[in-house]
Length: 140
Image 1: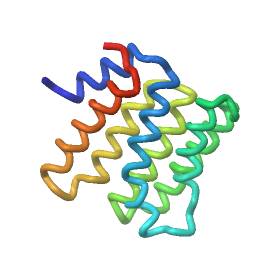
Image 2 (image 1 turned 180 degrees about the vertical axis):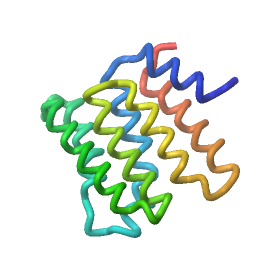
Image 3 (image 1 turned 135 degrees about the horizontal axis):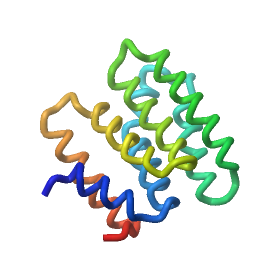
Image 4 (image 1 turned 90 degrees about the vertical axis):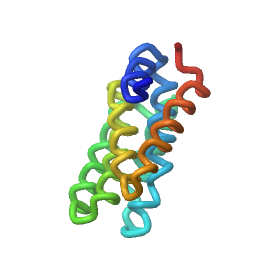
């Protein structure tokens, strides 16, 4: 089974809030790649929390979107470190999922870039992403 295609199909047919949680979970798994290098920069962490807050009804979509833009700015500042940059991009897309559900697959894709230092890490992370999406109640 092509997990990339399977994930995209699940995201497309699943509840917007479910995929937002999933995107935040994917981004949070790799957040340490950013925070180890930039411990004072909280923009990616705040973006992940913005997505979660939107799911809980505590934050407007427009505010989650602002947090996404801030996380992408953090990613640009970290461009010299591929893993840190990818982790910040994953967080930005996780927050942007509140605006458009299809951003979730980009959060997952950037999480894979962050773990790409080991050849088997990508396959393991993709497997986790797929299983976690199912566990969260994605519609199959």
